[in-house]
Amino acid sequence: MTIDELYKIIEERKKSMPQNSYTASLLREGQDKILEKIEEEAKEIVNAAKNESDQRTIEEVADLWFHLLVLLSALNIPPSKIFEELQKRHDNKK
Image 1 (cartoon, one colour):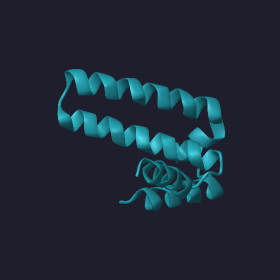
Image 2: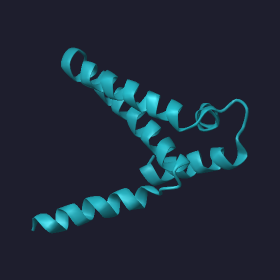
Image 3: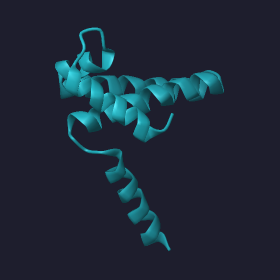
Image 4: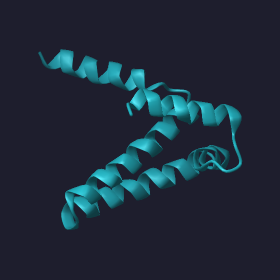
């Protein structure tokens, strides 16, 4: 699955807001809840990288990426904007 594919699913959840969807529940709870989850996942990455297996680190990074995409969706920022920013930074280093 690509970042764009996952973002599309998140966008679909935002439109339909199904009751049994974790994504929809985050969006209903709002930006503060999403940011809380991002902070939690970032801490878990640090712990996994220092004290746990590579697999645990991969799992925690996946969780963080997911929650970052939910935040971007809540803010109506497509991932392409992030890739554009990264490209600008790369281009400026040349």
